[in-house]
Image 1 (tube, rainbow, N blue to C red):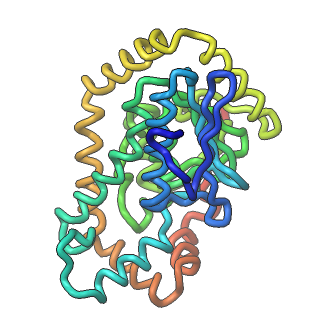
Image 2 (cartoon, rainbow, N blue to C red):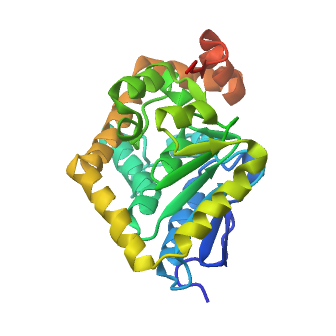
Image 3 (cartoon, one colour):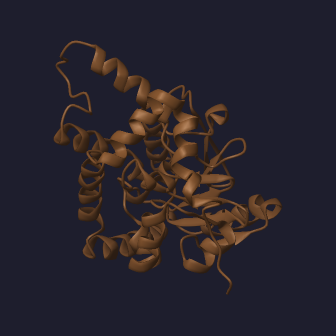
Length: 293
């Protein structure tokens, strides 16, 4: 019987050959991150970390996408319900700057589980890995992408700032600014050149490449794996990575108070989510970073 994860609705957890595979399994919503999915994701990671039979973990998405971000449809619906309801005994998440930052910190804690657990986590990225999908992926230890995967945070064009900021630790300050100031995405093959992912392969080779890497890692002593994962993560912590995550949540809460976010919310009411996204993204054309080296 599972110790941490019971009857998940939004993901699957399987174990074979010392590798646990966590599959985000809401393809109709492009594996968008709801609060409920994130709770299950955290619990699945803890379950895998607790199982002696597991040495390594793979995170993947069912359907066409790895993860297309946060579940904005459910979020806007929840906000509307909160505004319409009488004063609650609990934080609504939108009533004040501090409420918003508190909510973002709670989401961040769940996403950061992959970073905090002892066993190595590989993100297998295909299709879209955007917005909240990058928050999830960049907390994993190794990222392997399909050449044609799309990775980026288009929401920075109107909606906020990444509430989990691992960008600078992967691509450095100039490229972090390049992505956040434009919201452009990058294909897997170019993400590998920048160090945003470890490597990329043709889409039809992604399963084999991730299996090869996970199987090799899982052949080692899990306690030794934990030593080598955690020393690198401790170096990141000494470089301020944990403090940066708290500041990132507060900066996103600040960004939610901007005129751009108010205008976007107005567009959502008048045009619907798809229309608001279309209006937001039109000035950027294809919005894809292409490297010629």
